[in-house]
Image 1 (tube, rainbow, N blue to C red):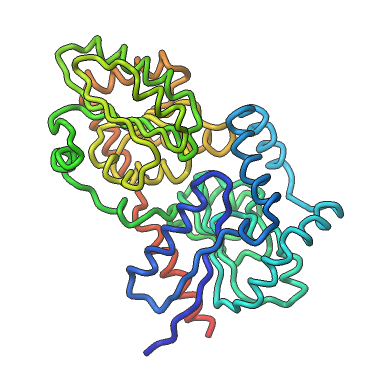
Image 2: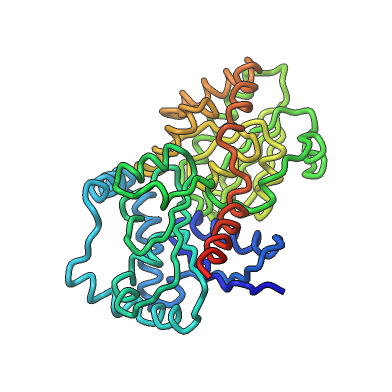
Length: 383
């Protein structure tokens, strides 16, 4: 029996996408017949409790309350290579001491990171310890921010040829970049019959189906969006619709959306945080959402065109640009524009058919499998 390689998959709570990407790698590893054993850790679980809460909440509050400031911050950091001053080094030494000790103690054969923090935070210390374990960066957006770049990374796994070009432009050699896609759960790598899955979800099987996502944390102006969608669908009296709204962890939003009045031609189903988003995507004709890296990758793998609104400045705007340029979706500048574009998609089926075909060029449903196979190949080659 060949040796099983022990691989750590390390994520970080900075939006839900990084965690979901790590879970996708871990679950895929359990399903594949590969000589690999994985464990998934969140770096923040090894830091002081106050710091864990501060780090996670700071990002969420920035993008929710001051998205333009976040965009400025994102662009500002992009202009120069990241370097730590003495104060940051001091705090990193305190905050990540337990994490560093754990990594060294576990003695993995390789580490895959779905966020830059797990290696950027301790890269200098690992070099001092002569830690020779290869570290791989599985990026989670179409754009690759400068924060991801660190000499300790053996290889970057990226979504698209455009992603690779951006890394090369930033000085990373081509042999250190592999175009695999963003890791998503195996459930997204198969497409089910829309009518069958609608019946399973107690929806009307023949209705045009619209899926609205608020994001894993309920961030976004979803109640206003749903209100305008209702008004638009009411005008199309001859058609019937299923409207699926996922509110995430925002209970206040869930209550508000649930109490809305819906037109006679709309069957609405309101969800909180769901585990079967793949089923909802299979049932749908179009997705209305922000353009997070994981959500966008999942939608493309499901052949589901996106109508994007309120992308977070920075990485989500870049994701939206790639999707719209490929013809796999549209970006609405406001809710009125969203309703106009939604009406076009409903009234002109050829527009939607073209977008569905375009998603195939961006679909990377086997990304997690390809990343794991490449890591195993690297470890075998390095023996």
